[in-house]
Length: 559
Image (cartoon, rainbow, N blue to C red; front, side, top):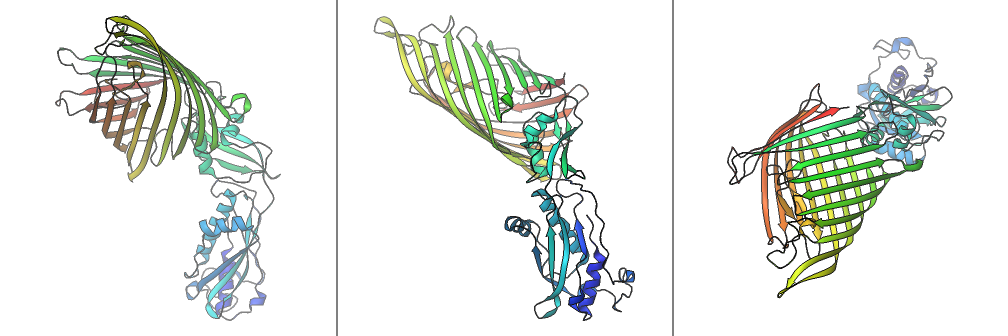
């Protein structure tokens, strides 16, 4: 962007020395060369006003015999012509001129540049601005009224996308992620909003600021720098739990997670997670996602999960989900699941209340949810928030044995159940390299009666830090957290945290009702190494002493 400030200064000098306003002809032009989205249209020559001496630029006497002195006048009003009412209101709100301030040609140049940047974002990347008139404002001889004429320029059509740093990702995927179609006229180009929209899909490690490159035929290419990262990663997490009461040695827990992210450049993703938990509990989770199924703006996901608790019971669940993007950062989804629980050898026994400890059951659930995210960076946010909520409703059919008097009978019961899942995080920058994170996690189940296989498992490094993995079972489990992070680099940080957990356990065939608050606290660090990303943490709770510490260490290997 360039502004012909010599013309503006010379016009000011003419005003202050009593020059004739009718002789003041338009001739100062501004053109955007980069604004908010980095658009670079072809440069146009800047016209030199006729009749103004070159000497009147650097403080020397000009054609009017007096040095220009912008401090003698103030800017009374700026009138913008040539814009539609909607864009005019946006410019007035987001790029106001310095009215009632001392007139400064350089400040005027900057303000015009900001105006053109806003217009570029609003779909006018080839807009130009010209100072049409400078006249006295009302009866005040030392106040100026400036009229700017904006020429919107020709419409710009999208030709396609270019991905800098991409090795496997196809440009068609970028167009779908951005919600833009080649051949359409660009009506709005907000580079930062576009970056957040693409990064929010979680397909790339980092996404840079998009730039709009305009050719001579007024077609444009959106150029986006990205870092794809490896097509797959294997995460290995090991945990050490101190010995429980009556034990001499601590226990080691572990989990492995294999994730494929955009392996073929079409946005597909897959995941396999295995967990080995205390008390002979093991779980598996498999999922696959297709973000743009059949070329439509719909995302499909399918998954399977299984859990086995020693010889008490086993549980299997099949699930599916359809997701639709309503706006950048805002999506709605609908899902269904089919679940089945079966007792083991220990689960067929009759509990103290006369009911089978782990009855057979099958259930179907349907749910609706919404996710809203507004983060500056996905991999290591420093500002913004995200919220996800999912409400499910279903019916469970339970078959069990129970004791009535001296007889053991089999019965079948239908139960209406509702489940709520909610999670949220809020990131606030405190100092130049530190971030305060607050948040909450909540899972709740509403049912007339409860079985052990219905309850949520809670506790450990990913849910309630400072406690053993899956130590608690409850119909309502949740935590509020606060975390202070000191940033090391783009993905690394050290942190200290405090979790306030809550567990509400109902009556089940093998346990009585109970509710409790469970605080946990500790510190950790996440850092990048040649082997991959390493995460280490140490956590405590008030029940034990300083030696009763839970340690978790994990590393993510790129494939």
